Length: 156
Ligand code: SF4
Ligand code: SF4
Image (tube, rainbow, N blue to C red):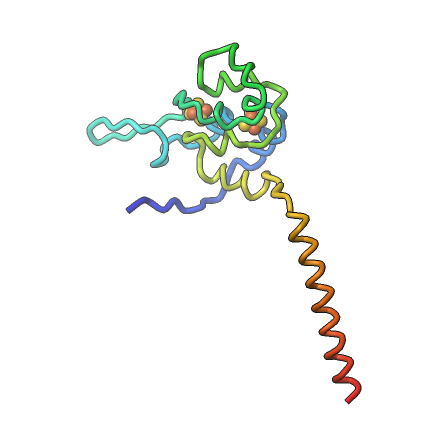
């Protein structure tokens, strides 16, 4: 059965806000703010000892998830690396602060990701104009019926 990871209080909110409010790829610094010894981190087993680390795994998840690089893949010509360093050197201050890289990184703590989703990710799902228009149309009919019922009730 997979382990359920409980939400724990974030103790690094202040420094995390500084990192997330800076227009630069945040994933490496979020990784370094993480504990590095959670079940989802890279762990080393040596007899009875378990050790973890906060290093980049070079998995490339952050590179693949970055909208700046998806829009301009030619930036990747600079390097063949798929690391947070590659993200920093190809995106730099053009970072759009979407935080996809941090959410995609297996070495970043879950409570940091929770904080980003709860406090930083802007709700950008656009409303369908058709549905909004239909909503308004039904609201007018509902208000009309409600008015007639109230009017009939008062007239009695
Ligand atoms: S994924 Fe988003 S936050 Fe990360 S570097 Fe790219 S634009 Fe910046
Ligand atoms: S997503 Fe992968 S490549 Fe990017 S910083 Fe995390 S471990 Fe490194």
